[in-house]
Image (cartoon, rainbow, N blue to C red; front, side, top):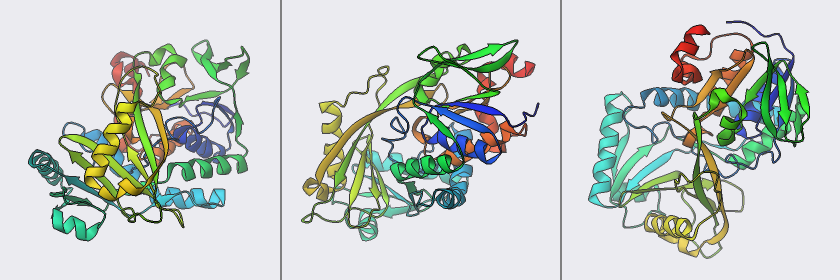
Length: 386
């Protein structure tokens, strides 16, 4: 693996992934410019903030589970160091997650999940509805049972983004509010990027971290990343309403997934409710049906939210990949790196992705768990050439 000496790094994308990678690069001595026409306003801005490797686990996705477990273990130190760099709290909320079910079919599915995790030596605590309500009194009588997963915490995504922007600024990272349209290359090596206004920017290395928009920035990523819309709601507790849960609540309601993530802000009781999943290109409209479905299912689980104020509706585009693993690594011309395709796990995978990018820029091996995320897995011949 060829080491790159510190030089000019152009990063496309100022979401949580791009900013965290920029911070690591700046700490390593790179001169970093992050390009984004609307910094910190994309999928990272509307994310739920769940750090949930266990409760997002699915049979056949063991590599993703291992990557997530590695990253969630890095989160406490990552948040502490970021808070120190920024001089403000990075927003990590250490309380865990409960996963609850309403009908018998939902309970059967959660039992299957618990059995799968136990087979991987990842035990979870099975609980009755009554036990869950003792743990989280906001849960309603329709909750019949579920799981407690204390190791799946959460993060306030907007506090995280604010801390990343401040830390990057203190480290000398420049944020340029222009859009990258393509990667420039010459002789099989990156030369920089071209912006929407036609400006050519020189760089020694380029990181594509533009989420769902990354695929259009270089032919090597064509067809590897797609947009997956997710709608979310933000609710604020009114004085007459019951307090929100202290933990993240994930639920299956007649087979439909819904989640509620508390925001721990003094004097407030905010909840983020999400999230729909729709593949319809780059559409970011919030739909009546999406809002209706989220409120209906969330109220079945947390009936007290009927007295909350609906303060925001929003939609973001998750960057989906072909196999649900992200794309983290080298691809295309020498000096080009990608960090995209994180799907529903963008917030969770921030620390391990930043660590992997830092290793790549130093010419070192990525963390063992990130090897499966090498984007060249979709081009075995190209991987052998590299």
